[in-house]
Length: 183
Image 1 (cartoon, one colour):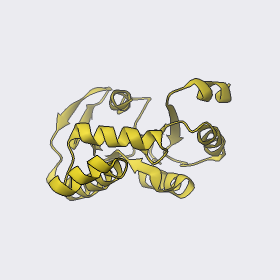
Image 2: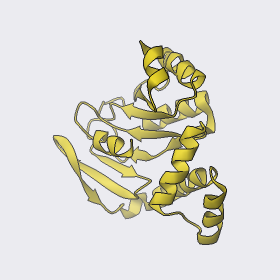
Image 3: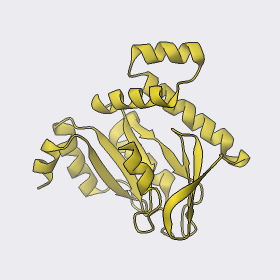
């Protein structure tokens, strides 16, 4: 079933358990996605679990699948109190209510701004690497617009040079809407 669905899909989405990171099943799915050369998005789920570890999960993805693993977001407060995500593409803080759903879009707080800017710059460089024109724009302006970023990321995904990583809590409907918006 997995093989036949991957063969006809335009893009695959692989859900990663935030407590475990890469598991045996992850590698089995990866082998099929890689074999058919399909774009892939990772969603690190269960960010609201008491043992959630986003950084460990992200590192396990990078160890297994290389530098093409591209961080698009990070949780501000993973674990049982999880309700905030910093989006590195839009450079916004998404704050969810107790029942999840549509988040409040806020400016990134000062205590997270340095980290967010560093990760945003890494995302811009990753997007620019995929297109010579974008690379020239990046050198000229020092940054790329959101549309330019999207174009570079799309090319990178098609070439298996970018595998975006999102963080979500599917159970509490936090982050899934932003993930779907990206798709």
